[in-house]
Each structure stands twice: as structure tokens, then as C-alpha cells.
Length: 406
Image 1 (cartoon, rainbow, N blue to C red):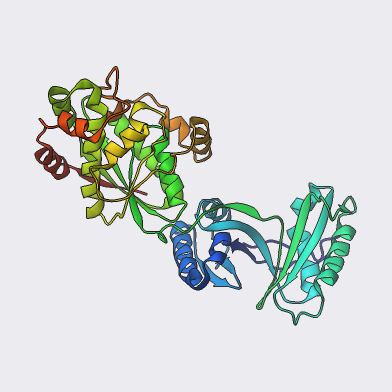
Image 2 (cartoon, rainbow, N blue to C red):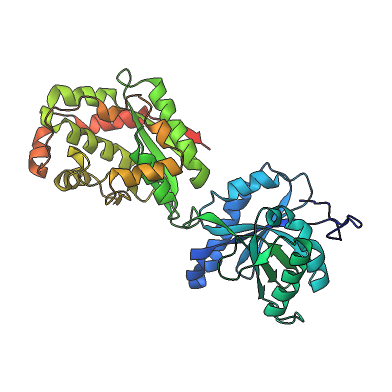
């Protein structure tokens, strides 16, 4: 991104093009040993995909850092920063000025590049790192030279090495020097796609979008499965789910959504099963269908938003009974969280306000007055014996609609 630059602190005399890039630190990937390169390559691929449409740029890696470099001034730098902040696998990132590898160029460019930051603070310090040990100045000498330059350009400032308002960073790399301000916290976690693919059972509530976000943060690529029960549920409920998934997709990238018709199954449960088992049998049917859809889409596990003991169907006996109908792992990232913890994450990822919109989802249809909290597998199987389970599953899967959330 270009900047006009004044070579003097007191008087604008000489102007020079100033090149700006984004430096990315990838945190947890440093622990991946021999597999680190694979994780970094996937992260770079994800970054490129997220920045599509913002202009021409290059992404490269070197010396434990990923560099995003605009090719021209048409690149939307500000929007790129907004998008990078949501990419899993990035521990922190900075916008940085590119300097030649000599102290003269660093001292010339830094005051103007940092001007807006420096005018709004009172104290600062300079830190320097030399990845290239052939640079003629030591790190303390770089700090001293640049600190003195900044003090002369901004007389209102003082140096505070213990608790500064701003830390100015200078990095001497193999091909260039970089000057930057504070590092911005990234989304953390692992790059999406490094841990395989799983399917999230998503309702319109608070919990399941948070569960989806949490597992995407651990590197899982997401598919989604939603059960719709018109006329008990409305088209607005379906749109609500799509909106929630679009919020999650800002972090996880695109999501394949399967919308399963569930009305007939719920009607059959209401007609043929004991009322106190309605919710359990409904969830067992959901799990059976979800497993088949998940496998057909390459998912290796199911994800749910259940939290232990939060409702009757989330007691430990109920969860055991529900899981018994599938043969793939069921991941429950929220299992040990309380509602306030879940809501906090929902607010942070901007799904909470959508989740609380008053549009019914199928999980609230035919809710029993006194649901079974301590079921046994034998009693549950007995309660659903009058259902034509396989026929209902096959029909629901055949009528499932697939769509794409980006």
C-alpha cells in the first residue's frame, strides 16, 4: 500500500514510495515438527482463498513468518486485515513497512510510517530482532538509533522500556528490514482442513454454531446438517440457520449444508412412541440420518452443541442412549461449558443475536412435559419398536436438499 513520505521530521522536502505488507505469525504450528510445512501450506492456501477479490497480491513463507505482499495500490489493504483476523492458524499479524537493509533507510521511513501511532501516545520503546546476523548493527544499537530518531521527530514522547503505550518493532530478515507497531491478535487454532472433515448438526439455537466454530478452530473442515419440520417450523427458521452458518463460515470457510425433511418422522414418533421418549427417539433418528449423510460427504465424525446436563436430553444416560445408534465419533466441544461461557463465545463470533430470534426449530416440536432423564438403551429401543426406522431414514435422505454456504 503506497504512502507519501517526508524525508524530514520538521519539513516535507523529499517524498518516497513506501511499501507496506502484512506479516503473519503462526503460533501453534511451530510445534508441529516435521509436519509443520504441510500445516503452513494449508494455511497459505486458506489465506489466498480468503483474500480473493481484494486485488493482486502474493503470499509466501520464510523464516517462520508468512508474508502477504500487495502487487499494486489497488489492493484493499484494510479489508485484507479484517479477513486475516478471522483465519484460523494465525496467532498474530502486523502491518509493516518494508525498508532496505540499512539503518539509513530504516531511520528515514519509520517516522512517517509510524506518525499516526506516535502522535496518539506518550511513551514507547523499540525492540529489534536480527534474523540476519550479518547486519552491521546489533539489536541494541538498532534500538538506540531508531529510538533517538523517533524522539527527535516526536518531542512529546518519552521512552518507557517497562510499560510503553507502543512497542515499535524492527525485524532484520534475509531480504529486507521491516518496521511495525504492535502485533494484532489472530484467531489462533489450526488451519481449517488440517484435521479432516466433520458434520455439525445445526439447529437455530445458541449452542450448535458455537460448537461448529470451536471445532473449525481445531482444524476441522465443516459440513452441516439441519432438520426442518414444516409447517411446524417456518422458512424463516431455515434462513436463520443459513445466516448462522454464514457467520461461522467467515472463520471456517465454505460449508456444505444438508437440509433434511423431518416432519413425517416427528409425526410418526408422536403417533407411535411414548411421550416421555419423544425427544430421545427424535435425536436417535437425527443421529442415524446424520451418520449416513456425513459419510456420503466424507465426514469422519459428527459434531453437536450439547452441554452436559443443560436439558433433559443432555444427561449422561441420554447421551449414551443417543450415541448408541451410530458407529462414528460424536464430538461435543461444549460438553463441559456452562451457558454463560457458550453465550460469551456466541457474542464474540456474532451469532448470538441471530440465535435468539424467535423462530422455532424442530427440536422444540412435540417437547414432552416430562422427558426421560435417565433412560436405558433397552427401554428406548422398546419405545421406538413401532417405527419403520429404515424406511423413514431412506425417505428423509432421498428428499434431503443440499446447498452451499460461503
